[in-house]
Image (cartoon, rainbow, N blue to C red; front, side, top):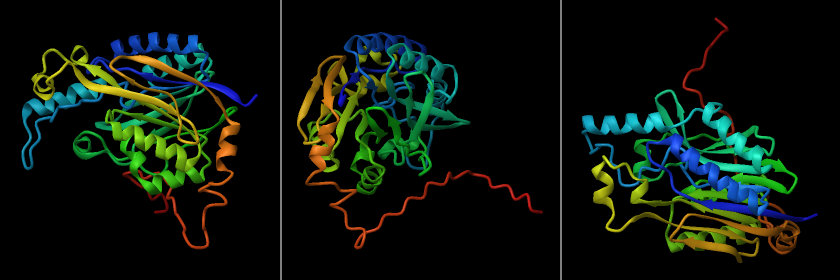
Length: 311
């Protein structure tokens, strides 16, 4: 059957409190299960948190002791791939019997990455994507990923891929993922602006695929009560306002945008719509011009140490 049920989850993290965020994630996964979804997408930095408004005590040429303590707290809230938090999330996927894409803050040594983890319906961790280009001040606390973590997951419903937040604005990244044959484009984000919805519709129409955009919805209640940075940042109770949505391969909105609350958006999709849409525009097929344009992907991991064992 070409028809499948998919969902995006709009929810906020409890910053600096990963166990509580996982508890809240369990409840959202119950809602996804009730929807009968075969694929669910959670927002960017959902596990580990998006530190909107924090400056980590940094100015050009200076850092503060308080900022170092903020980074330590943030590092402690991050997770390690294949750690206990991953096993918990895998359990959620197995309970839902669904593919699960989750935005996390990944810890490797003292360095943090903004990543998306892919879990199979059996609960196994089957893929990881590290954000290639952190945006603006995100570069202070997140490292850059490399070309080795741009997976496309083969699933019975179609090929699943992900671009995190403003990666979606990188044309060469988009073309790379189109060339890999993505049918279900997962876009974890914290971008709440109306222009983001326009971008999601454009990408769906350009790539002729389904786009699942999951945005955080974060309020003052989710902010640490002992941190003044959040008080200074916003004048209202909503720190991240949401705007999650599901879009068809012809750029039509199937669900959302959701505003003003947490929740699950679900839609029944027909995967043959991808073929119907690519009939007259397949940017990685008949509408490409490889005789004129070429694109090179360096997919080799970039370790910091290369051991020469020849000596």
